[in-house]
Figure 1 (spheres, rainbow, N blue to C red):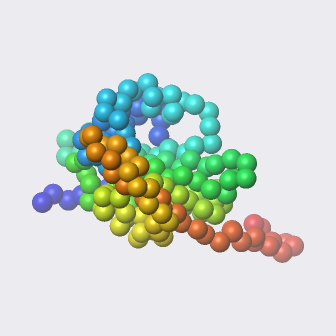
Figure 2 (figure 1 turned 90 degrees about the vertical axis):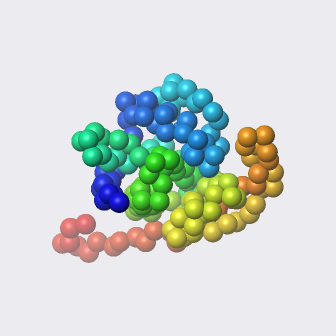
Length: 183
């Protein structure tokens, strides 16, 4: 067995749209998410180019041939107005790299962004009820199943259930700086 290459996490860029499109069209990614077959590159390009408050990350490795490859992708989509304390989490991992910790690394980066930089109190996501690997990953990071949507997702001609999962955190603490201290 070969060693797992280290993951570098960075902000997603419009130039990543081609690699991300290939990844969302993989059978395993499509099976575990709400992605439709034959997703066009333009959809991802538009999302990565659009000026918004959404935060998209990619996880890259350098493979044995020295080529940089995106193997994980995640997003944090903050809500607005009376739900400005809430963010939605999305996460996918390349079919060939599932189970190597790459998804967990990108998820940790998203949680750090949510907790320590955006001050989000609630994170939520939806996951197919039969995606046990993903459910366990989310549970390890503080998410709990809050409800099940029966017959929610049409996949390959069959209706399957999905779970709504959430993670609540306390409101960020205010640090008081004393006179003469630097912040």
